[in-house]
Length: 202
Ligand SMILES: [Zn+2]
Figure: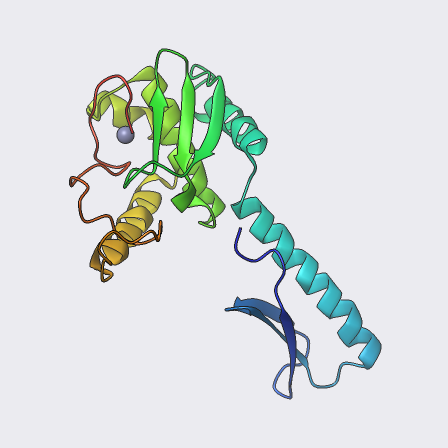
């Protein structure tokens, strides 16, 4: 959770804006654009409102372990007829290049902390992927059929491929400790979309 305490809030008044307010993070700053004609009271009201909305959105992108488990159960219910029954779902910082993994014998699922901060529909996909592995360990047609009900499977896989591509292309500091950087030593093809191990699978 990188931005628990954004340091600077910058309010920009725009003459072109008449009614719209927007807000976004830019590094450690938060930019809030408001119409030039807003009163001071309106500015205060909208800054508070937009900050709360941003924080809410960020919280949804950083669910706790308990929230992950609850979400996984919802997703199983909705897309897998509740057949996948995870016993625990938690964030894990040592997934290497994998987005997630699961252990069939105890029904536990780990989601890579690299997924934190991704859009909620991508997090949902990674959860659903691991849930499906509780029912099918490989990546054959039967496995993918389990994910057909989730409307954003293709989009999420594309999103994750893009992230991998960028991370693989990033200059890799030898022995670097940056968990977000590429892991040049790791074997290829072990991301969520393609891995086919036995037992514990991604
Ligand atoms: Zn997989």
